[in-house]
Amino acid sequence: MPMKLSATELQSLVDLLTKLAGEIGAIEVVHNLRFGGSDVRPRIEYFHDAVRAFTSGSHPERLTVERLSYDVAALRYLQEKPLASLNMPGSQSPSAAVAKSNALARKAPDRTVKDQLSELYQQYGVLFTALLRPVADRDFLDRQENLNEIVEQCAALANSLHSLDQAATLAYHLDDPEFRQQVLSALQQKKNQKAASLLGTKSNAADAELKTIDKAHADYSMAQLGMYEAAKDTVKHLASQGFALAGRFVQDAMAQAARAGRGR
Image (tube, helix red, strand yellow):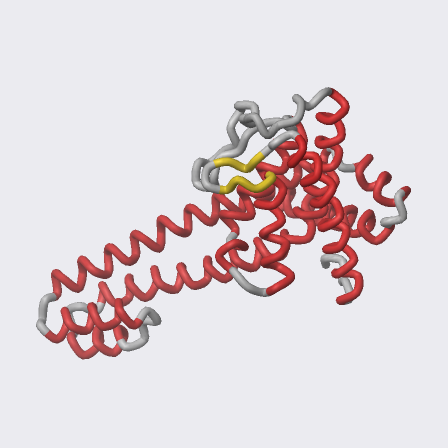
């Protein structure tokens, strides 16, 4: 079982992430390292949006398994290439290009800055990944259950179209009110072919989303394991800096990820 945290302990981890985000952000402002696209904030602010969504309980769309999978892959990437630019989620991968600079940049980052950013992103990344893994798991499992139910309902309805009464009874149990009305309307008009088409489209869309979230969940696990391979020194560093709780939390998450990886 994952390490159980009290509200105070959880807040201490969030505070540490916020502290690390502040240190990273200060460097990125000086060197004009921005996320890109329409988001002109320091890169770390994009990732910390997920932490803010987690603590506030708002903006659940920021905590989907797809978004979090991108976050973990991008954070791992920035550990290796701390000056690289990033693409918005949906482009599938970070860019290999160096982050663009302009006249606001005071000076080009030197090796010391690169190493410092890499270390800070490693510390931030392992804590971020460990903290939000249960959120990614929950989103994946909840949606997987709902989508599988849609596929099963559509299949049962499609197989019952020979009987208007039976099909109508099943249609009344569809969760999506708009889709339910569309199917019932087709049945009432005895347009079985239209009803079959609606069911097929809905089922195919659910299947496609199932594949998307399954890949995102697997990608999260792979990126997490890759990140943790280099995290042993980070755990020791956290402990040496007085963050023993964070070190234990990451160690527990590493063990959980390793067991999950062996079970896939």
